[in-house]
Length: 95
Image 1 (cartoon, rainbow, N blue to C red):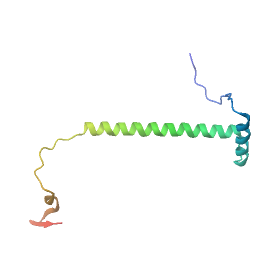
Image 2 (image 1 turned 90 degrees about the vertical axis):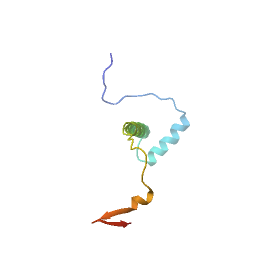
Image 3 (image 1 turned 180 degrees about the horizontal axis):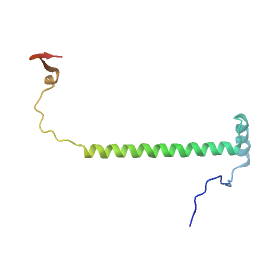
Image 4 (image 1 turned 90 degrees about the horizontal axis):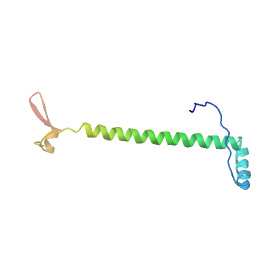
């Protein structure tokens, strides 16, 4: 049986020593730490994933709405020009 844990979790990574040196230099330039860079990247990755999932769900919902709201109006009996003619006070005006 698991439990919800709210806090920091320590993780161990195997990373090439030369890569660590390079990234630590980048961290110093950005006034942060290697841990800070990793944390920031993981937060960004999680946010992008959540955003893409939300977009996908919104698109699927929109597609379902289109399927449910299909309206059958029958045969078209008007012509395009009819859309531009309006009657005002009994007078036909072409727009």
